[in-house]
Length: 236
Image (cartoon, rainbow, N blue to C red; front, side):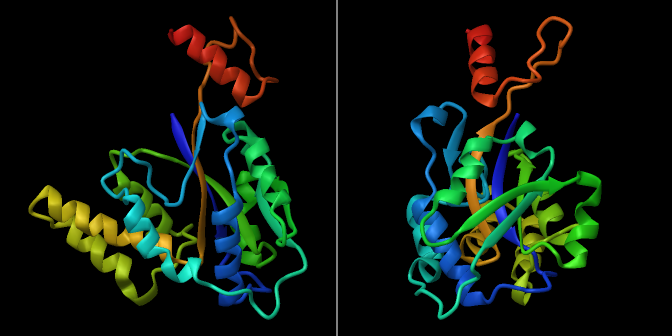
């Protein structure tokens, strides 16, 4: 299976980070976050929400155009001293820990990643406003971007905000599209919105190899890289 790992600013944060700071933080992460060669086989840096196989995927030039405002942002007058990124206690079972923790080494942002949220406590802690930035891992089904859009924008647990009703209108048009080209264009409207939005910061897409028969092989204490190589050897 596969997933996308990304950051999202909590719209209910008590100490909400201002817009100029959000843009600058996103710019710094987009420019400085790297997927090192060690993880090239299982992860790929992303500048957008959807993976290359999706109808909503944007070309490099489309991404650059949509992100122009972010990429041209200037350092804010003030920036939080520490940026605490919260994520699930179970996060590192389904995403690459070393890549996530490499956020802490981005110069000038002073990011601290804390895996302290039990999945069943997430909504309560988001609603309480104690979380400013959340690192999420979403399963990626490139065949059905509809499910992702529904969850991220329109579900009771959604964190993404649809400013000016843009996403909602494009989503409705997508659902009534008469051709594939219409479907793609309406999905791309949503994709461009996410790329240009300060609320969402993409990090990487990655594969998640699962070993189901734990009676034969117990890999519970092994890291993603070893599991991936084990799985790849078996598949070959």
